[in-house]
Length: 168
Image 1 (tube, rainbow, N blue to C red):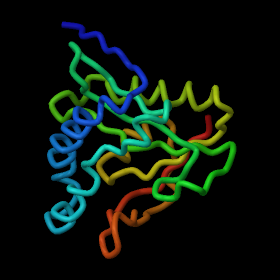
Image 2: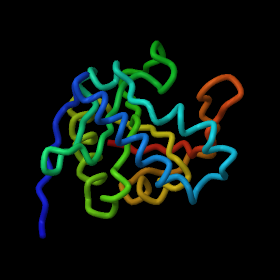
Image 3: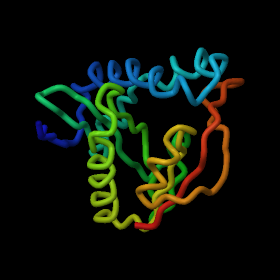
Image 4: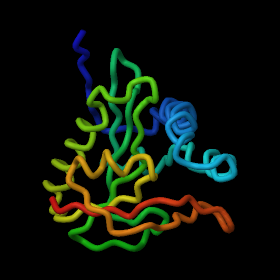
């Protein structure tokens, strides 16, 4: 059965649904990629939707039968550094697919929207901090590995990730 997906810009009204998607999916998706000691500290911090990002106009939700099954977007601001921007560089932000819906093209369609919208806004390069398990997904979309990084979540709490880059 072919399912149709609607992709639309998110709003602050989507906060609870995106929170639930992140909280339900990140633990399941990241379980094989990180040790429990990392997950127990990182999951509560990365599983919260960011209200400013949801209201930015560059963050999107994917709906299937009126249920949010994917979310993600881009911004000119670097994650965690709201004032640091380079005009032609965009940053992929907080991408997730419902763990029960992976491998159905939801993430790919979401990223195609991000590519089109960011390119239309004059972005010539996209950067992302991929979880270790997401590296093959981003590589399949044309991202190249820059190198390993630790994403600071809070003082003393980092998430090992991979810095990746793609030209639009």
